[in-house]
Length: 432
Ligand code: XLS
Ligand code: NI
Ligand code: NI
Image (tube, rainbow, N blue to C red; front, top):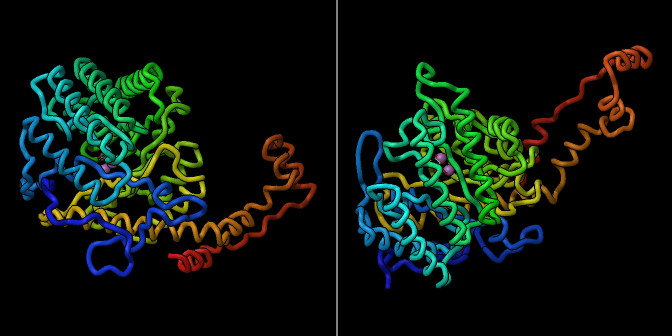
């Protein structure tokens, strides 16, 4: 029986359909030896779709959903609607924060009871053939107790409350068979340096993450622990700024083999990078875990979490992912929300159908570019000089003295060569 999405049929692949249909996302289509569904591993997020009420800094709720409310009955109705939507979309995965799916309790113990009851409820729905869990996470940023951070809080009680909450969320993720556990440090940062001790806060975050990794091993969680970088918003400055910054942090605490990254397109843009830059940086460091495929508005300068709709951008992102061998535990999560005027149930469905189609087109374009080989051949040719034994010997064994002697003896006099940017851009344009 339908609880919310009345009269909306399951969405199918049908390029010639009139109404709602996938025109590019065909889960069964084999791309570079793998089904499209297994490449993309789409996930639907709980929070923006079912918990967010349509507010913005200047106005409150615009959406009218029957499950808005603070009781367990509301939370279960919300879960019923969520699974109805997952089934209409045929999505293979979903993601949640604790606070999206359980009502807020009076204290930690009540939060935990509410969460456990909801985990059992979701477990039954998943057993009935619903989607799997791509990742779970703890919301350590909405409640006022977290206003000065979670692990990085000046108050050790908040550190303790946060650590205990993460434990319950890791337990929930494991119980639901989650394939990853995410940490996004929404308020791990500062508003003003005038009241902030950077050294202490970094140490607290390092110890916190080490405890998370220890607990993962203790409970035998098979999934990956992922950090989600973001440079700012809600705090003025967030510590997990971007891929390179997080890598430095992981190295400092010896966690670079234990933790990978969940990269979000909009966060890359906020950090002044392209999404493909962040993905390429992560793959070059062996840190790619999963992605949140939601974009920002390029003019407004904040995290607008819109559904992807730019195929060339998405294609370059998947190009880097495919080149590195594709996802293992990770996938493509839509951490995206409707615009607040999009009130209707069908808007939620259309948003995801569009986003999934854009990703499918991007994936196919990326695969075509890789199989064509033009970009990789050009890249290899550009660095070919480094493939000689002589160049490698200089790189690894040369000293400034020996190199200088060589430059003089061989009369080395470098001749600049074209970087061919326009030629390569034209090549990409053939596929997108
Ligand atoms: C917010 C983040 C958040 C994480 C999960 O900007 O993207 O939604 O993905 O906590
Ligand atoms: Ni975000
Ligand atoms: Ni995100």
